[in-house]
Length: 441
Ligand code: 5AD
Ligand code: SF4
Image (tube, rainbow, N blue to C red):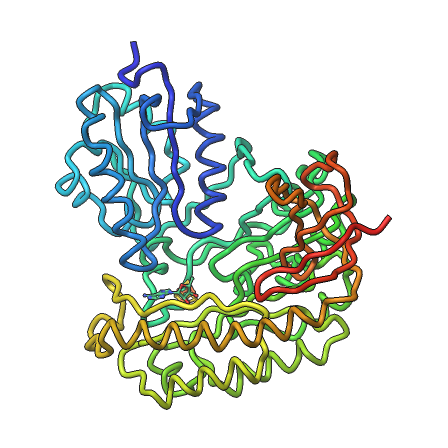
């Protein structure tokens, strides 16, 4: 009789798309071991949290969740912490939340079947933790894809950039690229399975180095775009340092590559960029933006920004605002700096009070809103190809996404569309974060 009641599990995912896709692989792996996924903690024998530690707030979420459900442990349920908090905190989690019996970082997921056997045998402290030197990647044929429209493929894991604020190099380990032939084989399987959209994933896809030396990142991107049946290819995230011109040329040459590049800048001040160890200047970032703007495609550009990094002055912050104007981003994910364990920036005083970080964040968001109002307005009167993602019944509207990754809500299509179908939409209205229109027949 296994220790884990009825081999059922509940899995909740926090954080980025890498985590979302890791969870798809974890679910597939557990199912191949005879486990069944259930929708609530109460129904599960094994409760798993796939965690994020990019900012302190994200990390705290899992500890709150563990506290909320602690009483379920008395009923014999097992608890496991996976992902970045697991790798970062390691066995300390057993002290902080004694009802946890599994702690596993992402580089150890290949060993999940053995870890499950140990849990079933009643082992109270099962760990899967790796040092930064691991060569393990998590390639599995058991991926249980949950997104009906978009199939994720990991092409590179880990990060060797060591930006001063960032915990990722410690939680996800060193950079390991997957063989390009293996990526292409998965892309073909995905297309055969009926998907038309693929998103290539990695902490730094532009650092991709084919272990067989066959293809550069741009060549892999093009080759995925040429897989029969694939209509849209996205990739995230790129680092400005290794964002090369051949990526822009690939976008121009291969029509299935989407009109969108996410290129995190973090700050508009070269002085702050230097302190962040980003290894590019404002001017070098703008040079890359120049390539994109001069290209035939002129893709939509989005970015990430951190406000309140140690030592960021009002003038530095204003330089970030002016960079937003200069680039005219279609979207900015902005964050207050959060000190993280092990990172080089931890030795700098976290000098900007939280209130001031919050003020800068609010100013930046308001500023960017104005830019997006103008950018989104340009689409009014255009006809865009949209992939259907779902429906907003209350408004009798379909929800879709265009190649530029903008949400396009539309009417005029009756009620019988399915996620993953494509329709042309004439845009009649714009908002700061979405477009609305009518289907064109
Ligand atoms: N504090 C705030 N934001 C951070 N990010 C990464 N580390 C931190 C941190 N310590 C942001 C960066 C990155 C995004 C995924 O999260 O902007 O691009
Ligand atoms: Fe973190 Fe920098 Fe690596 Fe991105 S490139 S994951 S911000 S260390």
